[in-house]
Image: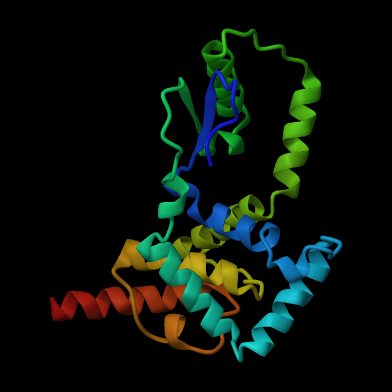
Length: 213
């Protein structure tokens, strides 16, 4: 779609691959079929609707986990780079800056410069940013997943909550880090409930990999 007549500038939120999982999770929670548009977008209601969809498709946690795993590993995110061709001045606002207050304020400073405006700051902006972070399901799941991966790498025992989205992201990171693409971590109907189980799988994989290469 063309930009509205009279537009003078374009601010394009440019996706950062580091946060593919954040984007994918937020799409899951916020972009829905037309049949769901009249629904009150309460998180619990959305989860129930998706569970009903899974049942209707005869889909399982494993199926959805593997679907997201493929999206993350193969980076099915070409749509994020689509941008309307234009002769207007364009500022690429780094998506990653939303998740770090210092970077976010600096990016706003750059945006203001681009628009020949001043950045007017007071602490209410920080309060709003904090609320945005706390309510951002994708970012919260990203932080939680990264903390679990740290426990895995340290060989610690920590519970892993039952959430196929988080399992898909962890598997994608583990695959890329250790050339680990097979076994119960990826093929099992269930998923390990403790980080130490995954540590043992990785250690065993690395030993086996070294012996065969």
